[in-house]
Structure formats: structure tokens, C-alpha cells
Image (cartoon, chains in turn green, orange):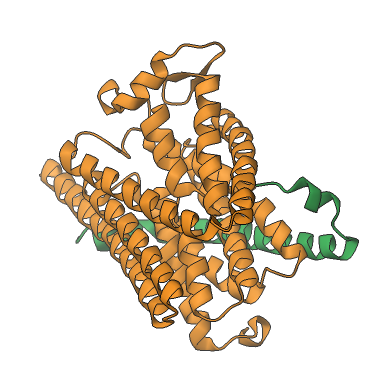
Length: 54
Length: 343
């Protein structure tokens, strides 16, 4: 899982690039979690009602 | 928007749709990411490094979202997660060493492929058999939110729990297991994960349930928690070599984030006895797909790659479709029941 040797021996540029890329994915994941969460809370009653066949 | 991603609208929609499909599976079963995305990207013509690195980054993002959702539902056992990470990490390192040794003997490729196919197919047969045999009462039960019911704990897990070698660890769901048993299971799953070069959710999630006896919702949540770390570290290592392409990861994640919500929410609605059979069949489909790809590579017939991908996507589509369909049926039942009670 964790290749410590590769982590320790990483060049500064490669590390910065990796931090930015992984950080971008993490930030997008959190934004999507919060955004879809708000959307779900807003639409859930309507969707449940529609799916429930009422 | 499209300029930003640097890919065409068609590909963008394809990635979002594919992400949605995987998100449902990931949120529901806590697995199914890397073994779907990486082969798909390879067939689309991306280099191996980008396919694996972007696949890992996508799995990392999706597992963050799915773990947060499972955490909200109280389905993550952090203590078990940390112990699993420790045991798995050691197992992966040993698995990698075995691969390197086999490579030096020139046997790695064949042995890994055969093990992968047998393991994926074997777990598929086992889960399908257990669910058919249980008739909906035994095996995996997503409704087991609180204390583990003794009838729901598989016999192998009861046997493992009976070895009371101190220190004993209390887990969520009222399960008490020896620390050494947890570390052994973690090491074994890590060994297979490192040996096969896969994320290992399809090994770890059933192992947490069938071997340790953790209720399925907590097994899924804890497995996802572990994937956050393994996926994060893996994608970081690939990103250092330019193996992570955000044009692939971001649209996939946009779709899967929604799918993961649907899948996670479905765990509290769906009667999983119906779904388990399809889950087992998906694993079987996956094993056949890997076998087809390997045979294609061996005989040098490129079209087998496309057949392999069609099998993987087809089985994933079938299972995620059944999750959504069963959720709708269950919601309709609940609605009808409430109406009848109100009358």
C-alpha cells in the first residue's frame, strides 16, 4: 500500500504536483458530498412521494 | 467547461454516466471501483499508468464521499479500520515481494491471472450459493444496524470469535474478537490485494463479514474507510509520475458522488437477499471477463478486450439496476403499507 521509499525519495516538483492533484480530488469529493447532500435533503420528500406512487 | 476538461461532450457524459453506475455499487457494497474503471480506461486506449493512477484517484474520491455518508449512518468502526489498515499494509508488502519473486522466475503473469479468476469466481459462487441457501434469512443482511444477531453470524466467524487469545477487541455491532484474529484476516486480505494488484474491497468486505462476523453495514463502512487511505496513498504515488488525469477523474467523480448517495441510501431500504444473488453473479461476470481478457492477451486477439469490458459493464449495470429497482419497489411497499395503516 504505502511505498515509503518512493514517498521519501520523491522530488519536490513531483510531490507538489501529486499533492495538488490528490487535493483537487479531495476538495471536489467534499464539495460534491455537501452539494448533493443539500440537494438530496431538498428533493427527497418529493422523490419519495413520486416513487411511492402517491 | 468542456474546454476545461479537454475532452468531448460525448466522453464527458460517458464518464459521468459510468461514474453514476459505479457510485451505486460502491455506496451499496463498498467495492467495485478499481476493477471496473481501470479495465474500461485501458480499453479506451489510455496508457496503463494513467488508467491505474486515475482509477485509484477516482476510487479515493468516491470512497471519501461514501465513507462520509456511512459515517452519518454510524456504520464506520474506526478502531477496526485502523487495525485493518495496519494488517493490510503489511500483507500488501509481502504480496508484492511474492510477485517480485515470481517475476524473477518468469511465472508471475500466469499465476496472478489464474489466482484472480479463481478468487473472483470462487467468492462469486460462494456469495451466490450462501444467498440462495439462506433464502433471505442468512448471509449478508443490510438491516443489521445494531447488535449482531447470533443467527446472522456465519459459522466460520463464530469459530474465529471463539479463539479468545488476548487482547480481545470489542467492535461495533456487539462483536468481540481477538486482536490477533483481526490482524491475521487483515494480513491475509492484504496479501491477496498486494499479490493481485487490486484495491481488495471484493476480498475485504466479505472477509469482515464472513470471517470476523461484523454486521454488513459496518463491514461496508469500515472497508470504505480503509479504501480512503489505500486509494489516497496509491493515487498520490501515481500522481507523482503524472499518472492521474483530472479530465478523467473529475467527471467520473461527479457521477459517482450522486450514485454513492443512492447506493448508501439503498442499504437502509432494500431487502438485500434479492440483491445478493446479483452481487455474486457480478463477481462471476467479473471473473469471466478477466479470463476472457487474459485469453485474448495470450492469443493476441484485441477484440477480447472489448468483450471483457462489455461483460464487466454489463454485470455492473445489471446489479446497480437491481439495487435501484429494488429500492423503488421497497419504497412503494412502504408507502402502500403506510396508506393501509392510515386507513
